[in-house]
Amino acid sequence: MTKYKLEYIWLDGYTPVPNLRGKTQIKEFDSFPTLEQLPLWGFDGSSTMQAEGSNSDCVLKPVSVYPDPARTNGALVMCEVMMPDGVTPHPTNKRATILDDEGAWFGFEQEYFFYENGRPLGFPDQGFPAPQGTYYTGVGFSNVGSIAREIVEEHLDQCLAAGINHEGINAEVAKGQWEFQIFGKGSKKAADEIWMARYLLQRLTEKYGIDIEYHCKPLGDTDWNGSGMHCNFSTKFMREVGGKAYFEALMEAFGKNWKEHIDVYGPDNHMRLTGKHETAPWNKFSWGVADRGASIRVPHSFIKNDYKGYLEDRRPNSQGDPYAIASQVLKTIAEVSTE
Ligand code: ADP
Ligand code: MN
Ligand code: MN
Ligand code: MN
Ligand code: MN
Image (cartoon, rainbow, N blue to C red; front, top):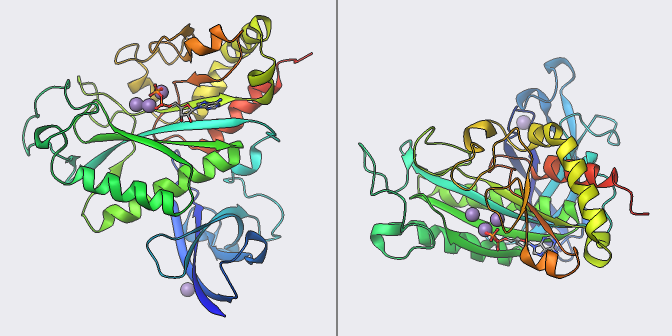
């Protein structure tokens, strides 16, 4: 038997953006534990905005497990928060709202800033660095500084070691801004892995004295880009049947539900979705082929392939909850007939 360090990780009840929480318990197993072997656990919900002090116990239900790349005999255990009965999802549990998504694939592009002393990493104490232009996919000290790449590489290695389906990284348009992409067959798988990758990034940067700033427009109304989390999605029907009529009906449903989508696409999105900086205005739905100024970008390949493939919703922002985002995307898709 080996003693494993199990890090149970969950989302708290803070609004509009939940925080990641985690605590460790030690349990013995013959080998790396499977999901079925992991017990329910509890926590004090009165300390996480999830319960009153008088009746404070919430339940942690393991939903996915990954080897912990930074700990000997460690496991990272993503959990859903349940009511004390252990079977009713807690109201803050957005993962539980995801419709059955058999065959749905999701790819999220998480953008974020590194922050040090309240400023983007690499910004001078006063004023601004050289304007945007050469930072995106840039190389060299004046573009990316001296430690950002070290962190990004270590994070990438940790994600791969944890078995997260990480697909790539790039330096972004603003100084101190980066992106990683995660793809999953199954919306819950992709969303779990985004949260786990965020967890690994935040834990990793503790030792550097650096924070991750996920706000979608941390530099406000300036010429510095904001951060998004583009949501690429496809269903089995979209990949295998598709067609122009179905696509048009789908876009009509997305247009009709624009408000429901914006409501879960991350806070303060009106600051980012202004119509500038490769964005569409937050309150006006649009789609366009290869158009990075549209709400939904339709890849060239989609049209060429008889309206089959995936679509990119560019509206979700970097602070969005991928569970809530996937849940709404699938809800709108479910409104459109495939007959
Ligand atoms: P860009 O920055 O040009 O928008 P990226 O390469 O950063 O493109 O992201 C594209 C995303 O689309 C990736 O996360 C990828 O996994 C995802 N993707 C590709 N094919 C599909 C598909 N069939 N269904 C859902 N997502 C997909
Ligand atoms: Mn205690
Ligand atoms: Mn990208
Ligand atoms: Mn990007
Ligand atoms: Mn994109």
